[in-house]
Length: 481
Ligand code: NAD
Image (tube, rainbow, N blue to C red):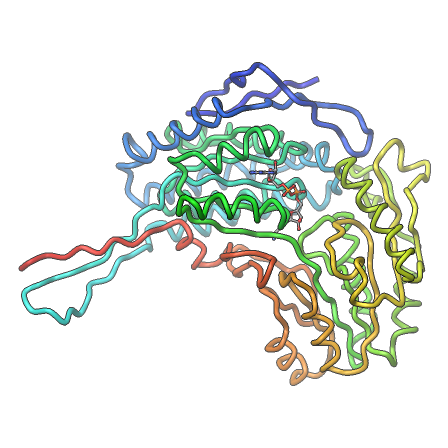
């Protein structure tokens, strides 16, 4: 079994406690790698290294253009190693190889984009109201950034934080999910090759309580950029607030996918299927509530079932597989529990609802693609994030009712509207409480498109020009002239 080491201060090192945890392959159920089980001693070493790199030595002295060039080089190295890193992610999280390859091939764009922005961060001179003074602003790096990431798309979601943070001149300590740390540890080795000075990028791995907590509490960490569940986000945000640390929170969702009678129904059905079953439903933007207008309800349900029934579960490395396993045993149990809850609540089970036990499923943690009809929006299945291949279909009469149902959840990450009426699309866009609204499409993201949540789905925005501001602080300089 492969044994990984931590990456701290440009070195591969064993954890202080000489302890490791096993990473399991969700398709085979077998342990395939040993991941360092760090503790507060490793966290302190990593944060101290990041702080040294921030305040002394070559990174602190480097021009913004030089930082940008390093980010470009890193992007090139990720492109070179995309296939290897994607295969590692599949072994760890069970997502389809094609999807992870797509992500890994796209990730370099984050480093090119933010690398290009690094030397375009400019201050301003102020048209002062006081004679005899001159004043200008400088944008300075916020400090050491702790990036805490979940298990569903480890390197993609980490890159949304790392690229703008480094472009801004910060240094970073990443804590990936204990379930999927291997790709982040492999990725960390590329920093040396790209020419980053030691300590600019560090990785500590292990459990949330043992590693995440001391990282969040470390006095030298100035910003915590977190992607994960809203319950963990709340704990972190409360701790950060006590010490006036900055936070960015990318949390959960319960996104509505709204189909009007005037939509292209086949396109909408395709969007609904990919919205919920891609990545086995384990995405924060999953379109887990399908809102369908009364007059087309039966047609949409029939077409959905026709497609979903044929979805092929199996080995995520096999190009023919369409639905992979659930990533972790606790998540597998949670999804099955939610299916039981939905049945008790009176939702009509239209498809699936069981553990996937086809021969192609091997020993994997599979849940059949599951569809519930006649869901009411006040049911738990419509209110809580399942994070699995479970779709709830809800009827609506008209625009007003669609908006009321769509917004009646505590989350607000994303929403989609399927319609051929541009006026309706624009009215809906204005009324939906969500950080991303898609019209006649689902799941599109880009390094240049701001991403983040309304309501309990989070704080701050990732991606796009303004994301770099999340890692900067403004200093105002006064000169008595
Ligand atoms: P999680 O909250 O359980 O864990 C996320 C990370 O936080 C892990 O690295 C974990 O070890 C760490 N952690 C746990 N407790 C901690 C603590 N007390 N202090 C510091 N760190 C701690 O989330 P998960 O189960 O890994 O991921 C699934 C969740 O992530 C879902 O809710 C999903 O919606 C959300 N998510 C959001 C986005 C987004 O961009 N909005 C993207 C992907 C996933």
